[in-house]
Image (cartoon, rainbow, N blue to C red; front, side, top):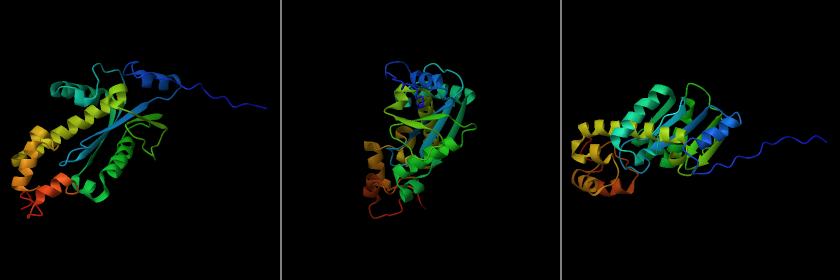
Length: 222
């Protein structure tokens, strides 16, 4: 009787360095590897931005985008965009309201991978599994802190979204989007109470619904 060969499973220690997942997968012929992450999930205004990244060479200094200073994020973003394959999906607030945040997040991850110019052999997603991806995948808890390609995706997603929120601040300066990027802060709550929501708020979110008051469409619609 012939017994099918099964490769020994890899054990990747979370303290083995940011490239440990990529090294372990590459040793088994699973390369290139794509990392996928999003920015703006917890915001009540602005888009959800999802990025997929295949690193074509090592980039020093990668980390969870939330742990990096803005100037460092911008520098790393430029490096990633120069030497990596990147897919970016921007999901507007109206679509989030219509379809739901998690559904948009999952769909955005699939779409970001589909935008990559080459097919990955393996995909690492941050936090939760994503069905329907075009290659084997693994959900990595806090993946943006332990896998280089996911950290790169988190930086691309956050810098892209931050730039969009700064542009949105020029259109609706009364909300302070350039400062809080659409997340719930005391100042943002006060602006919602004072002005009502604008068209780029997520109307299905409780904080925005509470700020609507009597003006259902908000001050920015006219």
